[in-house]
Amino acid sequence: MKYMKVDTPAIGVVTLRLNTDENSFMPAATGLSGDKLVELRASMEKLEIEASVDTKPGYISRAAGPKKSMAIKNARYEAIERMSLSCWWSMGKSTRWKVNTKITKRLLRTYFPSEDFQLNIGFVEPVCGTGYVAVSLLQNTKLFPYAVLGSCYSSSPKSAMKKAFFESIQSWCATNWLRKNNKKLMPYWDLGEIRRRSVEILSSPDLDFENETNFDNQKLLEFIPIKNIQVKPHSGKYVAWVYLDKSIDLNFEITKLVKRKKETTKIFSEYNY
Image (cartoon, rainbow, N blue to C red):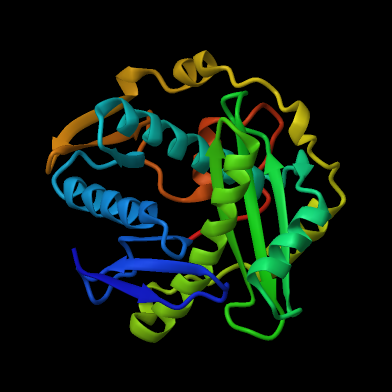
């Protein structure tokens, strides 16, 4: 496959974009330079896009994997991430925990030599009642796009934190790439809300990584039963899609599927691109 390296603002971090469509940033993946998993994740993204061309519309998430079980798991994780972030963002929910500032400062020193960058990573409530949803807010007051967001759902808080951090770096470089190559698709991040959420994360209690809550896989399976998942083989791998009762695209509409009584939508902008 033909990969193109896209500049990131982080030292030792690379974004690989598959040069399949000159107008689209995706498929792409971000990680440490030299990590072969970056190429694998980008290739899985390519499979998702290809397989979704003729699949039933209305899915809330999609994911690929070398095995059927892995594709299903990844699609479930993507759905939980999207629904949880939509609730946190659109309804203005509080962050449950934050990553200790010592850790975020260490990440900044390691990957961002400029003192202009700021980083806040928090954990929000997962809609399925188990696991960890991390959100990484990366900011710089002097450089475009100024503030972006990355997120991840995982059974482990350390895994969720790491993946969300790299996702925020990818959000940064994707926005810059689209600004230069296809401005019509460039995201317009809600800078004011991201900055407000950054302050809110700082006021949250630290997560105790050493005493993390056990992951209950049964809760995940019950929240997204197999009947809501469609799977099909593609190019020797598998792609899975999660479908809910309605075809919904916007974040504030997704919250209607899972919000509790008396909860109201407050933010109508999108948290991601």
